[in-house]
Image (cartoon, rainbow, N blue to C red; front, side, top):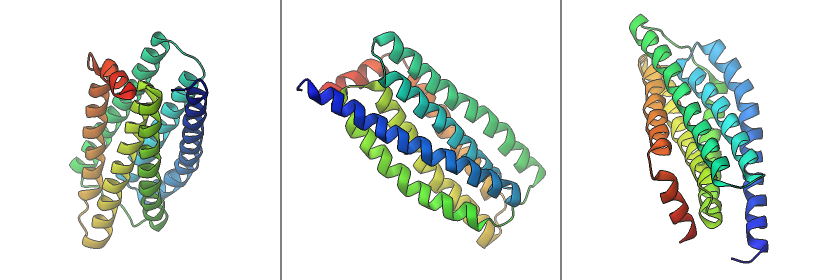
Length: 206
């Protein structure tokens, strides 16, 4: 790798994170309005996930501005902690919605935004994965998985909202929230598992 290559890759990583950050800032506002009007647990959870993604992108931008193993470790722990906070909130909210038999109302705005977001997040995740591997940066690689999961969650939430709206399956909306819980906990455990950071580093330099 030439001397200029890491600089170029870091710049690309910052651009990708900047796009993700901006997208999710808009998404928080759109999903907040949609979830309130629809009373949707899944949309509210996905809005919270957008807040988590904002925090994760901010952590990566901070990490890319410096260097050092300790800085990377702190950044990875912050991302994992954000995942666990999201999982706890959604577990409680989705469980309450299922227990109470909560019915969400249709939300065209939420459905449209979630569908567009799924496509955007998958594209951004692929670009982050390539850049993280080329740079050998486990933080960017981990945040790329956050973005990929964001795309998966958007797809799950979209399915839950549509099933609730079109088929009357009221339980599909909070069930989609529980899908987010599963993926959030799984990804946090992956980040915190001993040796995962070293494995990421090795994959990045191959």
